[in-house]
Length: 290
Image (cartoon, rainbow, N blue to C red):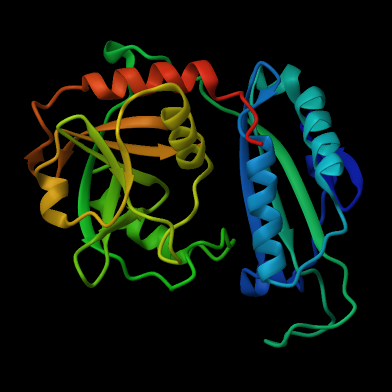
């Protein structure tokens, strides 16, 4: 039996009920987070919660829960669902503004936030082995989403449409470029480009999500390697000239891209810089950022 958390209570998933007047359902008025864990250990728990709390603050939503509360909720979900899901689980958290008696675009006053969370099984953690790396083929497209992509909103239609664009083309992701032909991110990933041993990724702006895997990887590389890492604008031409391209997310960790459109990336194989980065990430990803 799957156990979920809803508004202060743990219950079977079949008993969880949310009103159709909830603003998360009507407007996508909420924030979500997905936190992976392996054998009971979360990856980047504090940064995930900090990002969620920042997004909630920007939307003026206060669920009246703090870090210790989220820790208790998430650990309970891992424990209660381990027999069903196994040792590798992620916790999905969604907080909406709550339920009002009428549908109105303006924020209603004095309603209580809806807090929902559940655990689901995920694949075993990636390992630093070229022969076992999950690789991706991607296509490119113009970024047509809204200008607040730094907020991890439940309003994901823009991302879904872009993801479908890649999927319909036979690819597993899409690389998006702004009106100046600079790389932003993918539909559900951040992107890294490697040339001559130098790692580059787009700088954080409102155009892209501050990914937690991105944050952890940059911190790990700067602390534990001599590899040059840059946060800067990356042109479309640089993407096609790259020796390696990586996609990063909580579910993928660091995933090599072997083809962009019909163009082979580098020599068409998983690269040595990826191997070094994945080894370091596997070793240090449980380190908590101060």
